[in-house]
Length: 113
Length: 113
Image (cartoon, rainbow over all chains, first blue to last red; front, side, top):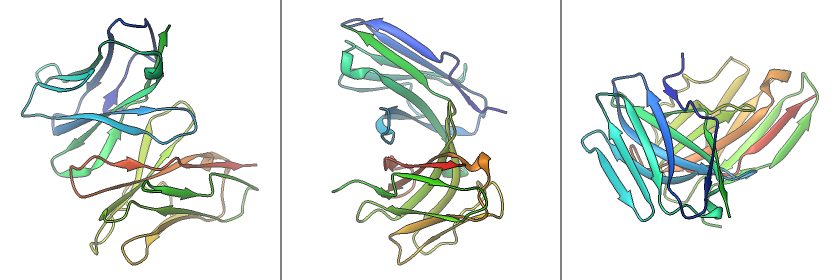
């Protein structure tokens, strides 16, 4: 049973527009969420995180929103750039096993010039 | 370099052989993790080391898998009597501690013939 789901395997957006990547989770014990970006043949790179005590965290062009009641988080990239084209993974961890990240299956983002 | 280093980057071996994968974490990082990514899937947690504490091996898929971390630094993941389903990218990560972002190496791509 997948505890972290990324239901869109791919997303294509025009350069300069907003990219919105979505993630849903089922485990109500999750209290820490992260987004990673992955290029081919490289390891995932940490982008941004959010604790369940917040509903928004912003870092430059990247903003993560958390809706605890809906068990949903999203990553907004504004404005999108061609270099943002990569696979994006959301991950979550629970209070009682905070070191163990549970990953979604990823969304491949393509930003068209 | 300053990042997590993994070797080899690629490994092709015959079914039934043993393999050993190596991870050199970021200096000063006390926590070390191994994950596995099968084709088209998210990352799957395998094992976690934190300082001198007993490791959490709960993600290891079978007793053919083992890992050790010597001197609180370098770690090796060993797979005995490899099977075709062991083919995957094995990723190592390290972090400063609990709830600190995990920083990943580029992985070892393991192919079992």
